[in-house]
Every structure is written in structure tokens, then in C-alpha cells.
Length: 325
Ligand code: GDP
Image 1 (cartoon, helix red, strand yellow):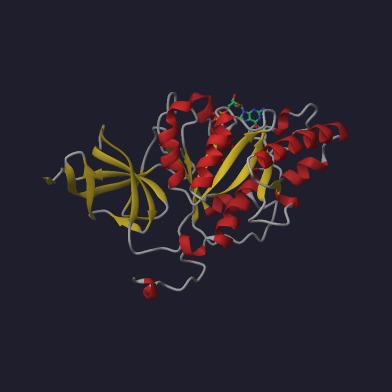
Image 2: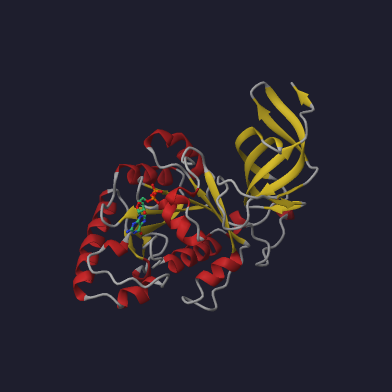
């Protein structure tokens, strides 16, 4: 009941939104994130990471840089965007449910060449049941026959370069996808033609290979979050944190991988973790994250933080356990 004490929103006091990326296996989730990060995770930079929840932090300055061609005055009030990536294979439904439950909003990736597939519909149902807002990335536009690539261009600019034949195929496939969504009870429309944002879901055509539409996707996500989720994204003093995994990590001792959803954590903070035999009380010896724009699951060097604000994916190095119940 501390609602009265909530700080007034001043445009500076927002945490980063958490965005989940979902879709059928092979729709291009990993490749899309690679394209935004400038990494090569999909090509096996980190073999066999498909079994856990992943996360990447995109600072606002990178998003600003990536979207500047679209709208130089794009106002970003959030410190960044945390993107959660869940395994796409059928056997990981539980992880996907868990991942999507953490999210403020989502990207639903659909392969333009395949339309809606079984895991697209499964993802859609998860999003519906969690009442999670989402943007559809209609991916692989570069596979349209005769597509002229315009690396990293906003989609409007890229579409202007295409021949009539390319646009005929594009529109035919787009219409099919819109019809398939309609069959699932959802209205969808190209985002720049959408006059009923909020009721009609936005489609952003993208290519994860050549980067067309990526600026649009990033800007739409951040602006939508800022516009519709002010209350949800306001910093709370109360820490809200979800554990992904507890393990013994070489060089770090017992580590707890977490998603910090809201609040702030400090080195030395005492924490309580729900263990198999009851609560475990310990304290934070070190707060570690990968570098910005790097995937959490991929082994690399860590940044050490004295304190860290939400939202972030963090590896907590814990002190030796002090009490088991
Ligand atoms: P995920 O299972 O959804 O993570 O899909 P991946 O990112 O692993 O992509 C599956 C395959 O589709 C890979 O061979 C990618 O190179 C390819 N792919 C992904 N996005 C695109 C795209 O935009 N255009 C083209 N031509 N291929 C893509």
C-alpha cells in the first residue's frame, strides 16, 4: 500500500523494458538478435546454447544509433532494452512459458516464406494468456525473388527500391499471413499503415541477414513500451528478481543467474534464495554481466558492478552459504 509514496514519473525514472523474442524454430530469432548485436551466435559462435534462457542488454545509445535514419529526434526515456531469448525446440515449452512470463512485451518472429507454424501459434497462445503485447517481425524479406538488399535500412526505404514483381509477391505473402492471424482471432497490419495501434497488432517486415526493418523494429518496441507502460516501467525500491539457474562456476564459486526485473542490487546485499531444502541466506560477493550487446549465455569476459539497476540479466557470485534450513 505504498502507492502514495511512488516517485512522480519524470521521464528519467524508468527501468529498461524486458522484451521476449518468440516464434517457430528457424524463423530467425537468433539471427535477428545477431543482426542487432553484430554477433554470430547463430553460426555457432557458442555451440549448444539452445537449452537455456538467454538475454542481451541493448543500451539506449545503441538503439539511438541504430534508429537515427528513421527519426533523428527519437526520444528514448528508458535506459535500454533487455531482450530475453528462449529455446525454440518443442521440448522447451516450460522454459518458453517462464521466459515469456517475465516480459513486458515481445517480438513474435514469423518466417515470411512459411507463414504461421505450430510454434508460432503456441507462442501466440502464451502471449495471449499472459496478456503480453507484441510486435510481429515478418522475417526473411530478402528471400523474396529479386529482392534488392539495402543493408540495415528502414523498411520503407528498402521497399521503395523493389521492383513491381517483388512487391506483388510481398503483398501476396503478407495478405496470407494477415489472414492466418485473423484465423487465430487477431487483427494485424503493417505498422506504418496501422491506424488502430493497440487493437491491431503491428507487423514489421525484416531481414536478419541484411538488416532491413531492424531500425523500425527497435524504435517501435521502445516507443510502444514508453507510451503504454509508464507505470509498469517505473523504478520500484522493491527488488523483483527471477532466478534462472544456480551453479558452481569456474573461478566464481556458487553463482546465481538472475533476471533483475525491477529495483537495484548492490555488492554486499543480503539475499534469500529458495533452495530445494528451504531458504538459503547468502550475500552478493560480486555482480557480473556480459558486455552490452553480448549474449549472456556465450562465454566471454564479465563486467563487475558495484550496483546495477533493472532490467538486467546478472550473474551473482554468492558468498559461501551461511545457513540451510
Ligand atoms: P531460430 O531457430 O528462430 O533462432 O532461427 P535462426 O536464427 O537459427 O535461423 C534459422 C535459419 O534461417 C538460419 O539458417 C538463418 O541463417 C536463416 N535466417 C534467419 N533469418 C533470416 C533472414 O532474414 N533471411 C534469410 N535469408 N535467412 C535467414
